[in-house]
Image: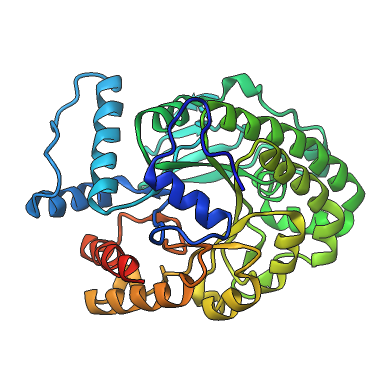
Length: 377
């Protein structure tokens, strides 16, 4: 059971639904939502919702960065309301360290918060040179000052909206893997386990302070994002995960639970062999449940539905990007039919981030169907 009210923020209906699901109880209707909506899709959804006259229009021009932030927040709120979502994520912002000269092709380059050299690749970014080129540099890495992390949007979304606000923070495995070559990192998990365990403990302490700062800023739930698996299973042996990374991860989970907020694990890929570990680590729930990686919602619900809040499972490889509206509607109904009995379920895409590349009509169909079907269950 989690606290009903935090930081003098009233318990809205949306927040009550998510808290009930995270406590494995049956809410008045299945909660639903995503951790993010990319800007291009947000704009197309706004257009569809305006045509339906479900939302009001917003000014198209911003005169300052603050105006732009306010407008983007207002637009996103309109989309969340129009889609009848209960939750979203407001995350800590990690400001870049330094701008660098553009590359020969004119693409922007900079050092990110962690010190990696990154480059603009279309609408996303890619790491050109990781900050740590070997195990020695990784062991001597100095984490940035926590005070440089910007938590303002967590405060705003918590205080100014009725939605349940998750904050996403990386886990020790993913953060350390992102500071060096991923292939090198996987090799280190075989050749330098003792050093990595010590480093994971230090990393976990820094991340624990970040997690607590997010909660203090108003986050009502924490999502620890860990890239532990791919479509064929965990990246490394579970025994190594237990020995090297689990102690630090368990401390992060305990911090969140002591603060009275639910904590979920986000992990793509085939997580079936990891689910007993997720329970033992104390997580309240898990997000993704990627069907294209072999994760069957009915099987997971039967075995873990009383111990884990299950979130996600709507396919992001074919269904939402390429499927028909009819296919999306049918899959949404089936997901609700399987996931909702007994509570402990949150409807979401398995990605948790709605992509600009997806048809807005499919996203609208998913949430329209969910709004009507979840009230009938």
